[in-house]
Length: 462
Image (tube, rainbow, N blue to C red; front, side, top):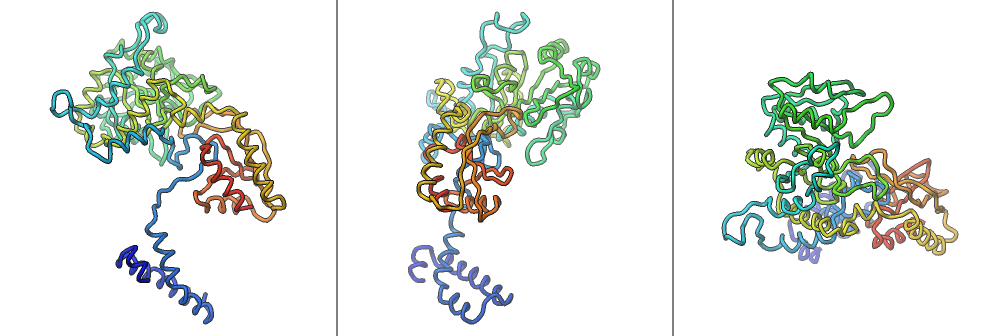
């Protein structure tokens, strides 16, 4: 016990002893220990205290192996960060940095500049003759600015409060979505002190519905991308071009809450119908809000891009300071955006996972199955390969699926729930899907360097 005190400290060991003794008293009170078991328990008191200390002094937040095939798994931290982002955080966070210091003038600077310059490169518009329907292209890159807050809901809150406080915001009833954690768009809007003006119906809204609702109290038209569900069947939604024309005729800003917000054309990875940030800006949308840790593949953040004059009003809002992000987020975001500027998309884990082919995944899966079967030929654990689908997740592209090759596990002595629990108990924990009594492992979301740990986990449960 003395060695334990020297290593962990007197107060921590005392607390560990108290917890272990309290647990022992509870077991005695519930008649769960006979005399022989009590002697064994008391004899192993030192080991029990050491186990308790390891548990209480270890990190709760820990790495896991995501074998679900859900790329943006909200419960598992959404987008993994690029290696360059981790390096940039390490290089700027363990020393001082020029977060708000202008090195050229030696005066106080603004933290926005570190990423705004990169967003301007990425959101630069094409020539005017590429604009849709013969209309002038959206704001030029010089007129586009971007600010960062702590998540997309905060971005919506800040934008509505800055531009529509005390006035009305017109939005379709079919777009009053609920996002994760039971947060709803109408609730966020009410906190902004803007009045919600609903138009249309759940399944059908026309541009004339917006037009009839415009009054002297209208401050903003809002379009919310239904990023986490789809409405199919007898439906209608105004064309974005028509909404842009309506807003500009009435000299009103049009804001679009994209939710996910991709910075590349997702059709290149087989995902259709998911609009990108540049698509909206080129169409003439004045403000776009989106997340940093979804399709962009960076840290958790809320990004607001659009007309510089409108962004300026948000930057001067005192609410912006309450919602701003720290140096760690800026470092991770800057490194992620640089990968886009360099067109090094495979450096961003989310994009790399989306680009993986079924054949690439199958080769890794076959190797793991072969090694488990050769190491445990008589095991009750049975592995088979089958076709399946990966999903984007995280409230992005709800109908998009990516073909994959799955490892299906069954065990004659264990239920799927029991087998899943055993995998979760490994170090690192393995998180899988359960379908029709089988455990399904999708290597699309397993980093290649984690294959060895996954193989060890499978061998141990076998």
